[in-house]
Image (cartoon, rainbow, N blue to C red; front, top):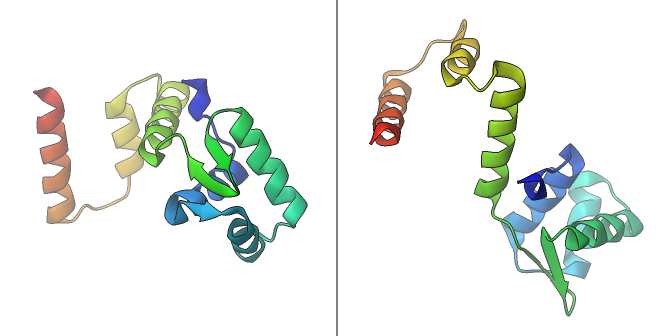
Length: 119
């Protein structure tokens, strides 16, 4: 599971790839300069690191992801739940919804999600 751990800058970088893949590495450098303010060397350093970790692939100057955005999000959300709320989803929801009003549509969507999880 540790494979899916991404630091903030890494997540932003991989998000650019998820949104544009497959992407030519030259185009990736341009996007990273634009969106992250990175130099070419920073982009290639982070790319190499994430390729070594098995998160990305750079083959023939074409970059693709080896892990899905949903897998990383699932890992991160479970990590927060365990670390901050002792693994308790009710504690998380209580904290998250504290002082917030849900729309009828949001409440219905949450009910549907919970009902599907109980099956």
